Length: 256
Ligand code: ADP
Ligand code: MG
Image 1 (tube, rainbow, N blue to C red):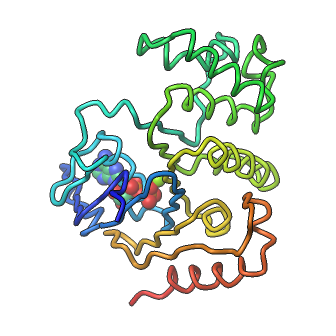
Image 2 (image 1 turned 90 degrees about the vertical axis):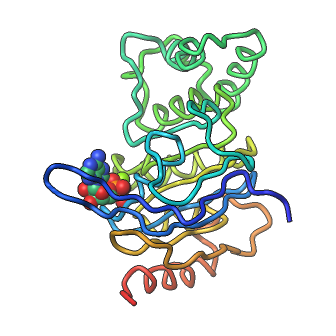
């Protein structure tokens, strides 16, 4: 079998604070094959963000191990891109300069990188907004700019922590469709954390369902909607979508 890009084995973690101890994760194991899109769903407060913070090296597991490309995580995993609910675009910089920011701070701007960014901006409709300020963009375009800024670093792995949850329902559908399509087209490996079952099914190849805190892996469900070319929107309209929805709903609401 091909080695997974990312592998968590038996990962456990508790937060120790003066106020007491919070068991967050209990024996979490899963694998992320290269090129796949994994969604992690679980009740709010169960430990989802904690998992992403472990993967990007902000936290260290108390037990278990995390391997990237078969080796333990480097001190500064620069090949991991993180996308959050807030887009963190700076108003005092143009859209283009915002997109360059990550590369700039890492001192990695090269003509090749610039050409790559140009291609992304043209392909994904931001080219005519190069000189605009973030406030001139719609919520969806801001998220797209944030994604391109992350992609500019050419991360091997993208982590998305409820990146759409601040958007209203209609915009959320459009933006998740947009972002999901870009990530697939660019052939990226992604781990999305969400409490939105529909979002998980529409975007992911595999959905990992977590229990309430301390999070354990309840079940892992491969999504096969029988579609030749998948976009988040076509997924939502697939006849099997509802079956998966009900299955995941049951898993989240049965406390066995
Ligand atoms: P989720 O992302 O699923 O909503 P989190 O991973 O953010 O959940 O948090 C899991 C649990 O750990 C929650 O009960 C939260 O209050 C607690 N927690 C998160 N971060 C910290 C921290 N830095 N110190 C103490 N407790 C924390
Ligand atoms: Mg969270």
